[in-house]
Image (tube, rainbow, N blue to C red; front, side, top):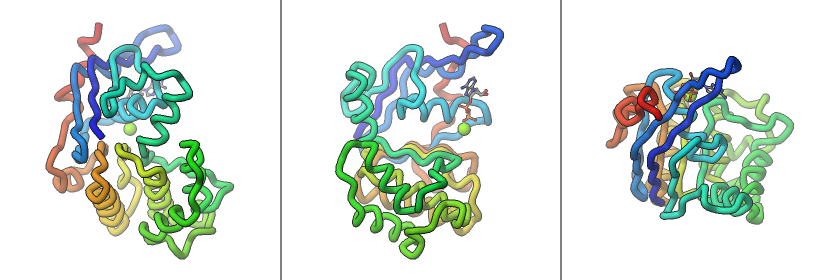
Length: 224
Ligand SMILES: Nc1ncnc2c1ncn2[C@@H]1O[C@H](COP(=O)(O)OP(=O)(O)O)[C@@H](O)[C@H]1O
Ligand SMILES: [Mg+2]
C-alpha cells in the first residue's frame, strides 16, 4: 500500500496551557512495498508520527492517506477497521498482555480487525519467529528478545499492508536484533508490505536503502 502524509500538524498542550509543537510535516510519502528507516533525536516526535499514522493519536491538522483513502474522512467504526486491517505496529515496549499466552496475544491482535481469528495462522507466525515451542508461554516467562518476537508475530497477524516498527531492536541483544530485522524485512519483502521503521542505530539503518532523518522533513518550530 502507499502512504501519503500532507500538511500534518501535531502539538501537545502542557499542563500550564503552553502549546508544544511536535510535528509539522509538509509532505512525506512511502510507495507500495517500500522499506523506510526513520532516524531522529530522542523526543523528536518519531513515536508521535507513528501513532498519528496508526490512529492512536489524532493530528491537529493535515491528512494521512492510505491507498488513496484519507483515513480521517472515514466514519469512526470504518476507520478503526480500516486501520486494524491494513496497519501492523511493533511497539518499542511490546504492549503484550501479561495474562495471555504468546498464541493468545497473537490471536487478540487478529480479533481487533473483526476478522475471524485463525489459530493455525497465529501458530505459524510464532513458528516463523522461532517460537513454535513457546506458544503457551506467558510474556513473563519469555526473554525480552522472545517477547519482541511475539510482538513482531502479532504485528503481522492481520496480513497488514503497512508495518510500523518503533525501535524494534532497541531492547534486545545482537542475536535477536539480527533475527528481528531479518523477520521484519523478509515478511515485508515477501508480501509487498510497506515498512516505516524507527531506529537509533546507524548499523540497523545502514541495511536499508531509504533512510530518512525526521528533522529533514519535520519543522515543528515553524508550525502555524
Ligand atoms: N501525551 C503526551 N503529552 C505531552 N507531551 C508528549 C506526549 N507524548 C509525547 N510528548 C512529548 O513529545 C515529544 C516527542 O515525543 P516522541 O514522539 O515520543 O519522540 P521520540 O519517539 O522521537 O523520542 C517529547 O518531547 C515528548 O515528551
Ligand atoms: Mg519514541
